[in-house]
Amino acid sequence: MSRKKILVTGGAGFIGGNFVQYMVDKYPQYDIYNMDLLTYAGDLTKHKYIETKDNYFFIKADIADRETILELFKKEQFDYVVHFAAESHVDRSITDPGIFVQTNVLGTQVLLDSSRAVEVTKFVHVSTDEVYGELDFDPDTFFTEETPLQPNSPYSASKASSDLLVRAYHETYGLPVNITRCSNNYGPYHFPEKLIPLTISRVLNDQKVPVYGDGKNIRDWLHVIDHCAAIDLVLHEGVNGEVYNVGGHNEKTNLEVVKTIIKTLDKSKELIEFVKDRLGHDKRYAIDPTKLEGLGWQPTYTFETGIAQTIQWYLDNKEWWEQIISGDYQNYFEKQYSINK
Ligand code: NAD
Ligand code: DAU
Image (cartoon, rainbow, N blue to C red; front, side, top):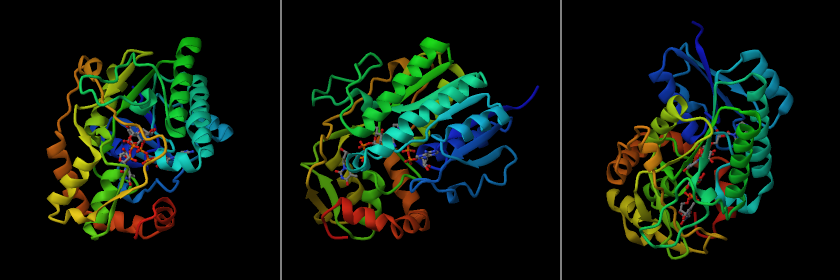
């Protein structure tokens, strides 16, 4: 029997990178192809440990480059596609929405057409709970798979648009797809523009931490390894055409998250600086994962165990995030925030 080929797009980024490592280790019988454009968010140094493995391959390509991608699919005849590649940061989508439409919408369509052309066995589209918009602060309300799509940022609108294309390719052409919609991830190799790694790296350098608005917005945090396990399960067991929400009931206000990190690192709360709120800032996200639990998924980390592991990882891997924050990132930070570096 020939070996299965799994194409992972965006495997040089945060979640895709963790997923590639998880799959290379867990499935020596699969060939894992990591396809990534290596934008500012992509980095291959994280894959030093797997790049010598026989079942790992890297391809540099832009998912929106139709001719190249179609040719690649025809050459490699991928069996499965797990699609992470995207522009993923809400703040960047507020300053520059165009690239979000280009990569997240058009790029997804190119992958769908290419997947159709070679008749893949499964196309898993990794989406986000942000497509559902926001919840109010009533703790008994959750996003389910039936919640209407009401995206509020250019980022979430581009992800919702890609979700609709994925759905349409299933309904129209019978492409075997699943869509996963996950809450906020955290863990190793999280790019330090997002709240948790930004806070850890700045607190470790005794720098101010920018908290938007009053810090009371709520996110539902999931450790990235629990997300990887969920996607693995959907890839193998998901019912074609179905959407699965992924989340572990770990709701925290942003201020709680920042204070936990400061306390764990034994630093002062004086580092917190309240800054201008994000435009269109969603109040609260919270996932009902009942449908995925029905497939047999359970998270293994609580927020408390996951954040302790993550903080320790950033302490042990300073060279990884220090090389990022010393580069172009500095210009980004100065433009984005009006506080002292
Ligand atoms: P990330 O920004 O860390 O990584 C994105 C990766 O995609 C990078 O390696 C980048 O180089 C690559 N990429 C960007 N444009 C590309 C293009 N045109 N062609 C090929 N590669 C390209 O993102 P992430 O946080 O790992 O998120 C991965 C996916 O998961 C995204 O689709 C995102 O919407 C979704 N998601 C993220 C979260 C989260 O909390 N981070 C939660 C739910 C869903
Ligand atoms: O819910 C899933 C989504 O989670 C993913 O689809 C996105 O790709 C991912 O980036 C994330 O989006 P958020 O906007 O929720 O994550 P971020 O880390 O940017 O912000 C988390 C919360 O912290 C949010 O309420 C805004 C706030 N925040 C963020 C930053 C960067 C601050 O208060 N200060 C900051 O400097």
